[in-house]
Length: 221
Picture 1 (tube, helix red, strand yellow):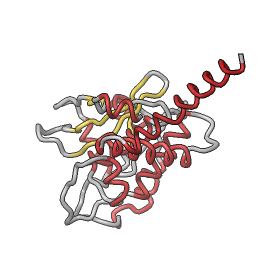
Picture 2 (cartoon, one colour):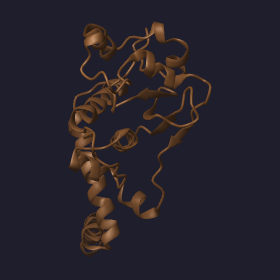
Picture 3 (cartoon, helix red, strand yellow):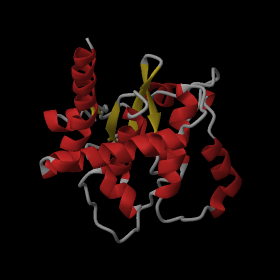
């Protein structure tokens, strides 16, 4: 009987030890996936610690991306992987959207990115959407925009298109306080009249869910 317990305990110990060792000592690609997923998990857990709702968790991750990743105006887009953007602290709008989704996956929320065409066929901007309470809700870490409904929910793309006057935003209040003397008059996108045109229905948007296919990535995650 004692020998049986020893065999069972050894088997369980192997189950606990071997998978982490295989990730650390296994193929290079698998190790890279494991390191990335671990970093995303650590950041997501630390940023959302003690948060009591999905809304609060997502807004914390949104603020983390917005305040820690910027876009130097003369930099080139570098779409490698989300850890690359977090280490460089620099990324364009589509990469910032993907990085937010990568972190949100670690708190069990799926999401993707949306190219906003609005009034022209060419896309002018990309933002992220996260699936919360049965709807894909818009967060724009690049511009720092997030809009809230009267029910204190994060607004959807459709909410922004059809009910913008019923939404509230701390960023919008700040821009209204700045008025015509805003920080950068040349960019234009910081003006809400321009920004909201990106949501017009002339050229409809499409949500691209980020799934990161591949068994190595799924195994490491």
